[in-house]
Every structure is written in structure tokens, then in C-alpha cells.
Length: 252
Image (cartoon, rainbow, N blue to C red):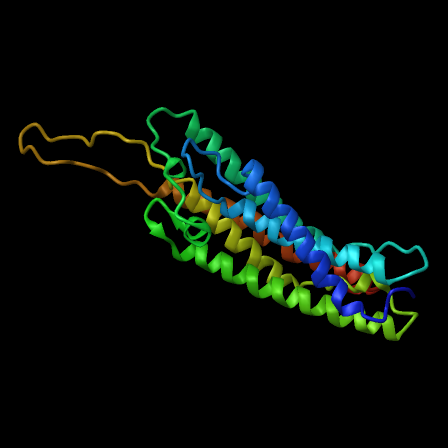
């Protein structure tokens, strides 16, 4: 063991240092902002989500290396990799949607409007503050807060017991909670596909002079179902991997 006298201060110090680095890079290079033509670019929910989990996980990883000796490097649990995968996948899918909208001249992008501030930017779509974005934010904050608490708790266990497996300091997130994060991110992506609608003139009845605008939600429903179906496959595969990791082949 090494640097264990005040082990509980290393994690928040490292996290604050990484947060300061992210804020500096955002101020200088708009790292957390949407691709936008606005002077004050709005914040991107997907980029903020990835930065949030990157800071937490990397802070824990660095703290373990600082506090624990024997030249050991912790191994990430499957659930930690899945969380990073969900965050990265959300950012990638969101970016593909943005590129598609930018190439469509008939689309008016809400991202090209001036940013209104950090919280409003990440919670708002073209219709204002949205429930699905709030849901995703709250689930990430709650599970992220628990993750930080467990890192500090497990660090205490490792300091007290030299035989403690350092790969267990970064906690396992249960399959149900992983699916919860996946569904929240999948819902965000599914609804994002319809955020910037093409500006088209509605059809007009020549006889009545009334607008005949037909709304067909089938395509949007199919997109959402495809995303959620992919996310739902995480749980059985993760349970199988977890059972094998714990030495219980019967569960596989």
C-alpha cells in the first residue's frame, strides 16, 4: 500500500482536476457544444453525458493507481465498459443524426439557435425542456453519484485489507440499471431523429381551401423500437458474462 493516510481526498481532487480540464477545453475549443452556426453554441447532451462518465471512471482509475501499491493496474468490470459504450454510442448516433440534418437544406436545426445556458441547453429540444432528457439526466446523476460513493467505500476496504482485489474498487453496476441507462439513452436518440423536421408546405384541398396534413408516426416508432431492442439485449449477455466471471457456469 502507499498514499493511504488520506486516501479519501485523492478521488475528489483528481475528479476536480479532470473537470477543470474539461471546462478549460470547452471554453477554448467548444468541446461540449453542438455543431452549430450560432455565435453562442448550445451544449450537447450526449457530449456532456460522455464527459460525466469519463470524469468519474477515469478519476477512480487514477486514484486506485495513486493509492494502491504493488504496481497493479485495475481491470474494468464489464458494466463499466458497457456504461462507456452506452455514452459513446449515444454521442455517435447523435452526431450521425446531426450530420444528416446539416446536409438537408429543408431542415431548420434547433442546434443553430443561440445557447440559453448549460442546464437549459441539455434539457431542451425544439419544443423546449423535454421530459425524456430530464429522465436521462436524473438516471445518470443518481447512478453516477452511487458509483462515486462505492469507489470511496471500496477504497477504504482496500486500504484496510491488503488482499482486497483492486479490480473491485470500481463497482459493478447491476444489469437492470445498465438497461435503464440504455433505455434512457435510446429514447433520447429515437426522439432526436425527429427533433428537426423539414420545413415543407402542407397539402391544400383545392375545393375547401383547408390544409390536409397527414402525420405518419410509423417510421419514428420503428426507429425507437430498433434502438430499444438493441439495448434490451445487453441484460442477458451481461448476466451470462457475470455468471462466468463469478465462477458459476450453470448460470450461463
